[in-house]
Length: 158
Image (cartoon, rainbow, N blue to C red; front, side, top):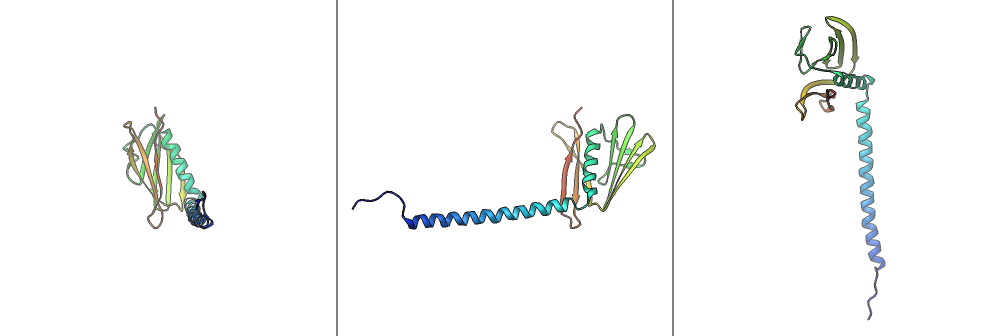
C-alpha cells in the first residue's frame, strides 16, 4: 500500500477548531481591553478642570527656573509647589482634596488667582532626573484611593 501525502479531513477539522478557540480568546481579550480603556478615559476626564490642572502645571514646570524653599509664608511640601520664573515672578500651587489653587505673584503683589474645583486629591513630590536636575512628580488619586494620574513634569533644559 502506498501512503499518500497531505492531511486528512479529520486533521483539518481539528486544526480549524483549535484556531477558532484562539480567535475567540483574542476577541474576548480585545473587547475587555477596549472597555477598560474607555472607562479609564472617562474617569480621567470626569471634570474639565482635571485636564486644565495637569496642562497648566505642566506649562508652569516647563517654564520654571527654580524651586524656592519658601514664599509668602508658604513652604514646599506634598500639597504646595513653589516655582520661580524669570523677572521676580513666582507661581504658587496649593493642592487640597477637591480643590486646586494657582496664584501668580510679581514680587510681593498678587497678579492672578485660578481655582479648579471638584478635582481629585493631588500630591506632589520631587523627582531626581538622570542628569541631576529635579522634576515634579504629580500623583492624583480617586475617591477610592486608586492612582489615576502619575506624571513626572520636568523643566526645560537650560
